[in-house]
Amino acid sequence: MRGATFKPKVIVAIDFGTHGTGFAWATVSALQDAAGHRVVVYQPFTQSGGHTYPKDLSAVLVNRGGLPVKFGEKARNAWDRELARGNPQGFGYASKFKMAIHGREGKSDIPEFQGILTGARRDTVKSLVTAMLTHVRQAALDQIGRYAVGGAAYTADEIRWCLTIPAMWTEADRQFMRTAAVTAGLPGDVERLLLVQEPEAAAVYCALNAGTVLGPDRPEGQLEVDTPGSRFMVVDCGGGTVDITSYQIRAEGVGPGQLKETRVADGDRLGSAYVNHAFVTDILADRFGEQQLKQLVAAFPKEVGQLETEWETEKVRLVSETAADGTPVITDTVLISIPGKIWDALDADTRARLTVLASGETHYIEITAHEVTTLFESVVRPILSTIERQRAAASGDGPAVGREQMLLVGGFARSTYLRDRIAKRFGHEVRVITPMDPAVAVLGGAVHFAYDPSIIWGRRSKYTYGFGCSMPFRHGTDPQEKFFIDDDGNEKCNDRFVVMARRGDLVPSDHKALSTVAVFPKWTSVQVTIHATYAHDPEYTDEEGCEVVGKVVPDISGSVGLPTSERSLDVAFSFGTTEIEVEVRDRRSGAARRAEVAFDDLYGRGSADRPDTAPGR
Image 1 (cartoon, rainbow, N blue to C red):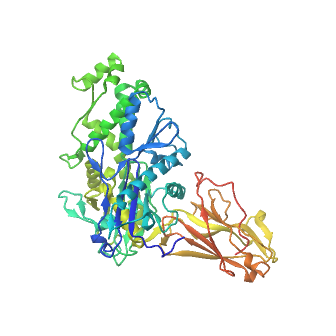
Image 2 (cartoon, rainbow, N blue to C red):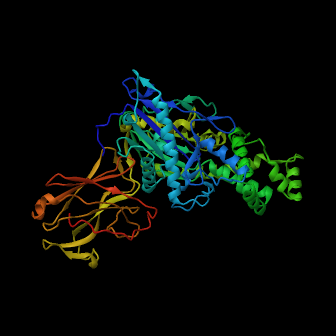
Image 3 (cartoon, rainbow, N blue to C red):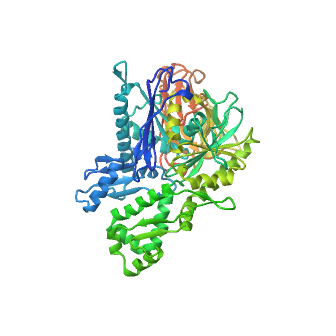
């Protein structure tokens, strides 16, 4: 239940990403209340290639019984050793499995499930997410537990947690994440476990921390928040997705309740993992041949994985340069060493061809600068198109106040090629800013958001929400099959959709949409069904694409037998957080019950399960 009773002493944010997962935290005190001086503690990790990162690898190793035994880089290293022995212990390995959560647009080819986890189903994915969150939760508690004030360490009951989620996720995905988090030991109530959209968290971070203005001189700068009404866009490029969200600064600037979302978030599966995927499907398939590559993957999975790991290391090192016409280019070739087992398994013609392509060197794959650029462009070009689409949508809000701004964040934003392509395309129209370390923007911003959630004033509703209700019958408009006479002798239409928020509406974080439902004297129980749809003006709850996403059975026992005029329910929808809340209260007794909103994977395709609607309004 949401309320103002919980006063945290510690804030912990967890950023569960496609490539990596990490946590950051801050103590709550008067000295920390000033966001500009707040100290956020990060946990650094050393990944393959020797570079540090604020996250560990999102990877889990499970034993024959399916129980997790190692996480992160330790899991990958242990899996590599196990593969070298032929996996005699029957282990399973999973990485990048966050991409298997958002599954309604077709199965993603990015997650890796190997060993006994091969062909993992959605329930297995949930157990892996739960295991990863359990591991990170314990690591955070261990670190915070060593920090004592006045001789006393902080306890788990004094922590407010915050999980980051992609803006493109549906409510089904968000519920999946919350359920997994609670199973992992995180608190279940919404005051102690917050969800924040990743671009939203990044916006808060960039308003508080200096970054680099992408352009010819690359001066230092940060998000300008002094111009009331000015707009900015957050482009969050992570391992698996790109999320784009637009915001506007209210008159008072950034402070309590001063950011509002101006457009429904846009995004796609366009993260840096897809550059790696293109390396396999394009480069390796070209060098080895598609059929031989399949055979190598089956026979030498560890060694093929080493090729991908070496490409990832080289990819991070690549630096974009500027051609004479100002176009960003990559001029370096990349050499990837071929493990001996793979080289020996290749046919003579393939080995000869690879030697020629590698300028006479054996045991190497040489990737030309043009091919490297093509790999990046396979992801960068559609990212630019997605940004264009969001900017075009934002133009419908009227002329911008002051200069438009764009924040580039996320692990993929470390790529100088991506930065330069965005700066080249949009820099003359938009002030493009990236933090000093774009990989920590979401994680750090999540800490600031959880410290003071009121900084976000309003969000855009992703769907049209409402509930089912019978209403006066409209002859000539309503379908005759929905006609009935109620207990008071009135002509009514069943299954009417009472809209509480429309798709794209701006809903303030403290706003509640209210409606009233009448209850007949003889009724001893009633069910209020909650519906969602992409349609802007739904008429009936059984329209195509309209789904039941929750229900409330309110306590009406205190008014049984009273006339309809004295029996009514107040229905309240709260939309301003990253999750919706629905409460139904009996006006006579004051008894209130909340909805259990349960989105599923069939979302947007209609629902065959349509419970009875409330009797009257």
